Length: 352
Image 1 (cartoon, one colour):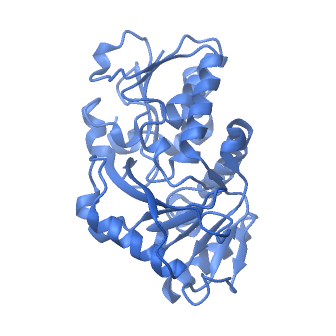
Image 2 (cartoon, one colour):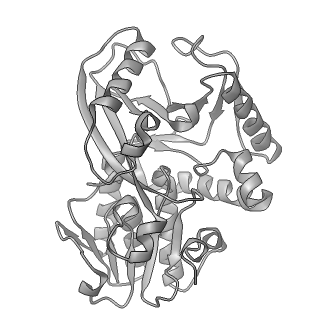
Image 3 (cartoon, rainbow, N blue to C red):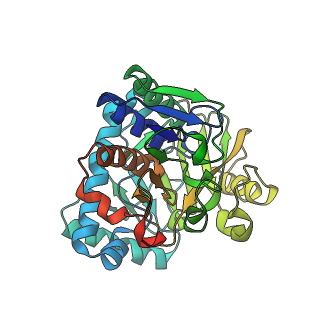
């Protein structure tokens, strides 16, 4: 068995296969967690990229409910595996204006009707009050130190017998002598399989991190403007802020891992407005994630290929879905495919 990509998906897949007694080699062009799995904002959220009411409309009530329930189970699974890299904090989705507030109320009602834990927050504390028009609190969600989490997952896979090969870039699947290959590269997939190049579009997310603030202001991950703005505060007090890619979408659909003055400027102004001060910026980075046209992952066997599998295209929700899809694809390889994989079948976008 060979797995290309040592982010959360590849490491999760390797762990499951190695625990089942399979010989597994995990190839990473850089180092463990060197891609988006170690470069994101650290949100561990249930669900997928669409809001729950939108998912019910697009997928049907039964499939949407099943997807959300599955991701809740995988937040629990993440908590079991991640140790101190994970904190169960819940998350707060905020309405930037009255129109988004109405959307949040619709999602809240849909979640409540289907029995999911959710809270409506009309009154918000400072500095959120007056800036946001209500919020939904999602109790099952959590906060990650993403690089620490993925390195821990890789260590568990290695302890189970997987062979980890860092700094070994795979340019073509023909290089690999394995009977089964899993492509787990999300937004870094370009060039490995031609049909994936058009199905998974790379997108850049930019982040900055401030110096430690004097007090804890944000006890859980926060996000607004349909996820275009997101932030959380670390246990050490630093504010991790990402987003504003919608200010330059044409430029942010790219595989180039570079910060830009435009987006970083928006991030800095957001921090200053939110806090009423300008803390020192200590770190900046960018990471690449993969998006699909229907905002659902591709996870399963590649159509017309008895050897290759894919688990990628999480549309910005890879921390939980990446873990889920890595384990689900491993299960299918082992001969126990889960029904949840039907929703992610690559054939829906690739044909075959």
